[in-house]
Amino acid sequence: MKGQTMNYCKLLSTAVLTASLGVVPLETSAQMLKGIATASPNENIGPMPHQVPDDPSKMNIKQDKSTDIWRAEREASGRPAGPMDVQRYQLQMEPVGIQTFFKLPVALTPEDLQAGEIDVAIFGAPTGALPHSAGNMWAPAEVRTTRDYGGYGDPKFPLSWVEYETLLAPFTILNAVDYGDAGLNAYNQAATLEEIRRMTREVASVGAIPFIVGGDHSVPNGTFRGIVDVYGKNNVAFLHFDVHLDRDAGMGKFGAYYHSGSFMNRAVQEGMVEGRHVIQYGMSTPVFGPEEWDQVASEGGKVYHIHEIRRDGVEETFNKMYEDLADIDLVYVSFDIDTFDMSYAPGTGSSSPIGSHPEDLFPMLRQFAATKTIVGVDFVEFNPFYDNRGQQTARLVRRTMFQFLTGIAMKKDGIEPDYIHPRISGEP
Image (cartoon, rainbow, N blue to C red; front, side):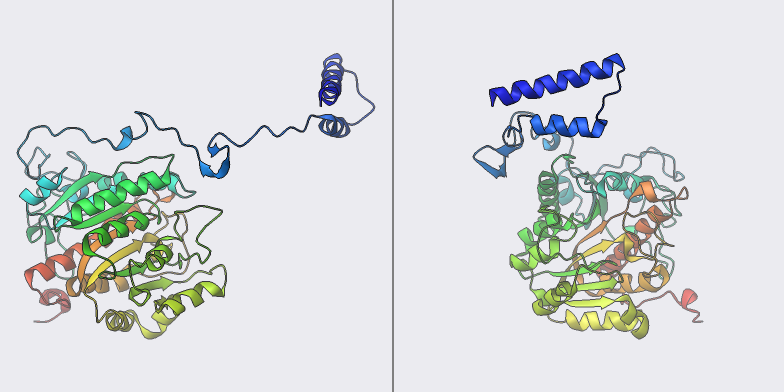
């Protein structure tokens, strides 16, 4: 080995000297490099720093005081428990004031949620460790700040946020807050999902409904697990809106453990939800092979493709989903914004030219939320970097959230799920 190393160094020094003198060697540069490589020591310097030397399949992650500082919460300020309205004026147009989801008051602790008798707590779940996630981590901030009709002061003010078809102002019925954001570890996706799970569980454990604004579609790996922590295994159905199946029969994309194709597989295989209570709506893109569809069928789940939805109609498809979920009331919803045709939702990393239309889906989402008992909803895959200057997708995310909020308010107030205001429906 010593002689080989000396020979390699001699070749390398000759090559450097030749280059410095401007002498054109007889060999081409490629031949020269090939000779240097052949004569090199060809050493194995050991595993990469993140691998345990004796077992490279395990990660050697440094642990010290700074490891978890990103999720170390600050001490409470000593204020009385309850939601805080952080706005200055009674009435203010959209860009004025401190931006929160729907201009809602802020809550930071479970004690705040309990004191305010909160029905819905909206929080951001930014993620940043997967291919699409660099922009997705900005989604919660963008949804908070996007302009739209509504948000003129106190959310309970009747002219603030009104749903068009029902003319209902859900925030006059619901007690809702902005619950901030889950901590983000941009270098460790698994750790981020742990924190998202903890915050979901924190909200659900006091009887509030977590509304989660992601983040990529790995988010349900944390959120649904947090819901099951509270409500128990096999007690909550999983309703998934997407143009992608988001299934990975092999349970690993390039070795990744948590990703957008793992959340339902893990939930079913770990016994968190029965396969027959997993319903998927809106699929219109290819999968990696027919075994993906076979897996869903073998579990008893249902997939409603855009082809059959357009053939049978959106309302009829939802009627089928009600039949699928007839024996279970609690439902968790995971809504990928690329459910919508890319002409409506350009701001997503995996958009499709074939998808659902808001005017068809909005009434059904509202009705579903007014019929079943929603225990959690996530809205994922919005990437502001791909959105247009009019914030088209950001506005669509917020309007989709608003349909669910209106339906939940209708259920709380005892309003029939299919209610439409007479003036809107054309009735006298």
